[in-house]
Image (cartoon, rainbow, N blue to C red; front, side):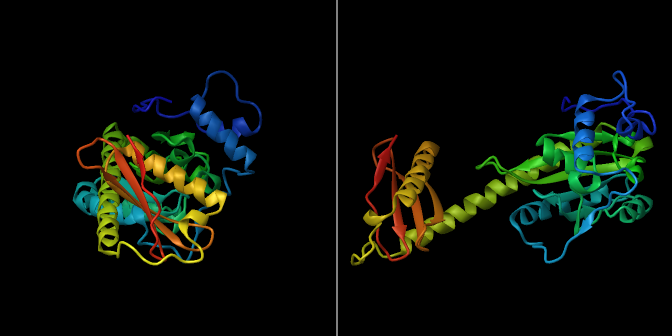
Length: 299
């Protein structure tokens, strides 16, 4: 599907049931929706029995939640009293934050388990904007009867994956949901802007962490007596992993710090720093026992 708003109104009622009965013909449904229905069918889901999973022992201070919390706080007054609600979830489809819209909509969402602590992944709830955006890894709109679950067909939702700006990995999802009769293209605008704001926060948090690691590295002693296991005695797997990390740091072309644990349990801190008077980048590795490997220079 194109990442623009779809004003089609969704397919006819009970089209999911016709699909499951093998009676779907013609171009009755969008291809991206049909692909999702097929995934639901292969997972053994049925429209009348799907339900979200309530999970315990969740980390409500994980990175994507910490990044999104100030964004959601700023948007609380924007969403409050309107016929939409906003959700934040992690990469597995667990809901962590919800901005409330109108009370009637909140009651509807509570009734279907669209609340923090529940997993609303496509594998649990069938085709829905929140979960299907994670599977498709792009903005995903689900309108009315495009929902696989019967209880969601009075709603329209738009979901957008949240990608970490440095790694490119999907860290979570934001979705905006409202009743079919009030859904409009502003929902698409809101979800795009919100996802971008959370991604910016993730970038800022990563930069803060790199600065802290750099300060820690610079405070550490520069030498240290050799031990029986020096960095030059690394196994081949660890050496390749460190070299790969060093290449990626050099490719960034800027000062940066990463940490990684090697197979013997030590932590290696890799620091990339520009070389004075040059455009080259030097990467040094410091290990938990204080040893430092040779610089790895590059452009």
